Length: 312
Image (cartoon, rainbow, N blue to C red):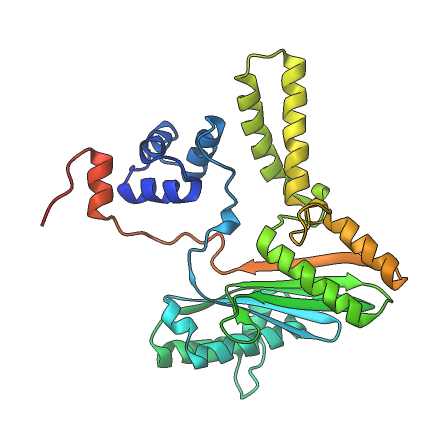
């Protein structure tokens, strides 16, 4: 059984919004397993659904770059936000995003790619670590392309052109007016940055995530005391809602919060007189999925232990 620390209770509280003592109980009930504790809280109705991708736990920058019918996104991590504001670091991320247009989503290939001034990307990164004095890492990359259409990029709260903490690429396949497609693509990218869809279509959602939601829904529905057939319908209704709310095409467009994204695309296709296919998207949020160690604070320790906080 993992040790239940004040830091783990604090992390669970931040990720779920549940009360401190509920978080402590959840961790005790699940042997200190953070993800299992989140599920335990949700089955008890004490926490909202938590997307792991929504929690930023590392510093650095996301970079996006588009040329013609190709767009690339990269994430480069650093130890502190101070380095992310460094001109040398920003130029590195910007250049790497451009190189990724040729290497695609293979980070190993990207690291071995030629650096414009000589050497490789990996060697340049090593040089930056030495001169900046802080550890940095090339974490991931992605590439989207279209045969005929546009690839549009968007950075939320950009730290510099093409650089920020959330970067989005949208691929629209269409023979229609490219200026109109660019406008639509930008709106869709802003939606993706805000709504954080987990897949393009409901059927594309990670089966493991769907089954996790099904298990939680089943336990909650069973506690209602209703007949088995009613419980089954309740579970299926919950899963259908989960698919709808987490798949991009079926999400409600953030611009009006009433029209499905797929209907927004269809309306624009009718307007420009040419079919439009939202074929792919990429959303990188800095640090998603990375766990960062938190320090134990005296107040948290005192609260979890049930002891009065020390007074200076």
